[in-house]
Amino acid sequence: MTPVTALNAGPRRLRAAGLSTSKTAYILDLAERVESGALSFRRLARASDAEVVEALTEVKGIGVWTAEMFMLFHQERPDVLSVGDLGIQLGAVDAFRVPRERVKPFLESRRAAWSPYGSLASLTLWHARHRALEGQRARG
Image: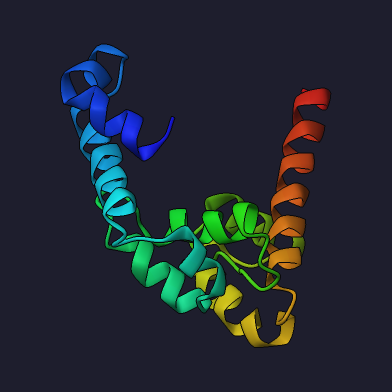
């Protein structure tokens, strides 16, 4: 799907395809911004992390977590420590025995030490949590 296809489909057809009213509005807002040039993925490729987050969170339905996942998985940026990601938080709880209520400040305190490899830290913590859950299921 391209921005033009989404815009041409319009809200009725997108809803008929099974999208919620909110998701339809989000997709159309994103498509309009890309089609008008207000949001350029080429410009985002050259932008700083903060600029990417700022540009993407202007789109309805896109928050900081989504912007971070875009930078981590689509742009493959090396230094994205997604403190707001639950899997990463729980990975840190498991790996560092940090109390759940202190995990966000703990991760923030590690940001500088793990830079410029925040993405590696994010993925390692996420995979550690995923493997721990697989181990629990296998025992369980």
